[in-house]
Length: 598
Image 1 (cartoon, rainbow, N blue to C red):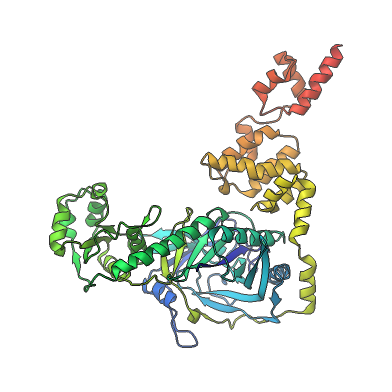
Image 2 (tube, helix red, strand yellow; image 1 turned 180 degrees about the vertical axis):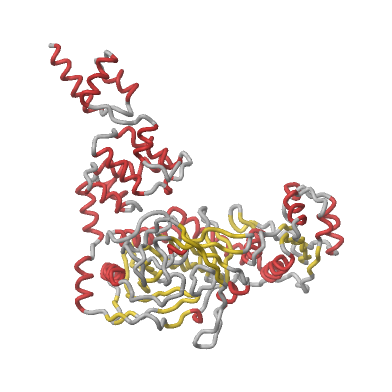
């Protein structure tokens, strides 16, 4: 039996953060950095959370970039948090009203232990606002277990020297709403529909922050004979169905593979330093690693030959699964016996490795390249996972293709404890009444869209992640159909060209449309401007229009152009100046010219 639950996180457009007055939008002016090491500690019940211990064992230092706008002593954990942002609470109360959730009498902030570097304090602040709500998705009632307000984590920038994670502090503390469903979803298709409906409900408030990374979905998935697995960071609706289908295939494939693993007699792990065998290897990567002091640690995996190459889902094998455990332990991955040795340039070193490991028929092997301590720790993790006779409960990270890799063990109840620095917030009857007054129903929103667009385009726009931008553009005077077709169809066409349209800032799109409303560009120029913005997201529409000579030719200038071309038909003019001339204006001017000649 398949059980799927969703956790949807969306940043709230409140202007400032959840526990301080720093702006939610940073100016990207870096003013300094700081370093921290985080350690797992026991909760009030005396227990250390297993996920926190796993992250703490890596003992990696973290570097945090500070910015001129968007960071203060609260983000640095050098000052207690202020009172909770009541505007953020109000938005979440409205969502409670829109999902028929039972609102709590008093909001109590909790601490959720996280020592992966994503929060300088070692915990994330979160508070439940609503319980036991529901939404309707394609005629099925989907329960909403909790609706919470919480603070956003730091933004990951990258690694330093392969170990130290670098984060940006300006994202930490931005208000989020988290909506968690019950596990009654049964397929990837249904999960996408539910996420789409919840996303629509949130956007209907018109108080959500927009842009890349402002919304993400976590999936909780289990199947009969498998285990509950959390897949974090699914960024797009388009990959939810793929992510679910891949995870179900992974678990079902592991269930079958485990039956073979159970028949293998597991031996004690014996790690071998095989560095000397690879000093003259054909692999430049390994030669360079050894030259800088890294080691090649290898181990025999009794009875495992052939198993590493088993495909769990398309382009994801058991070897890939085990490699995720090595990466989570700080290594770069694994090399195993079921791979094509030609791609590494290996030759006689494989024979030397087989002798050193004393391989028998049916035995497999794994090698890990890296600092010796890291490689040995990673090998311990890979070996333990390879012979595990069950599908493990764990947290996995999604990529942009719907695949996932191991992050850490699934956290338990020991990670939560009360926040003593933030006062509880009493919810009054006036708060509830105000929230209900701001609630928008799906039917009302659908009617609003269909007043502006034809039914097909209205339904498409309803499900668009750019619906709020669409409504703003219409308010600014953009013709609704043009706005909708551009945001949905034109951007989709550009994505098919391989362009990253998601990277285009919404302000750049708005600037482009303002130029159109002001008569500075014609409709036909819009795709070309968007194409250039996708290639250079930091560019701006005005510069592109000037550089690409896309200014509108109108009025007296259009009349002069007609005289210069000595043209009397639209086809001749539009063939050469389609991106600069409005066809309706040209049509009127040509008619006027013909009338004058008569």
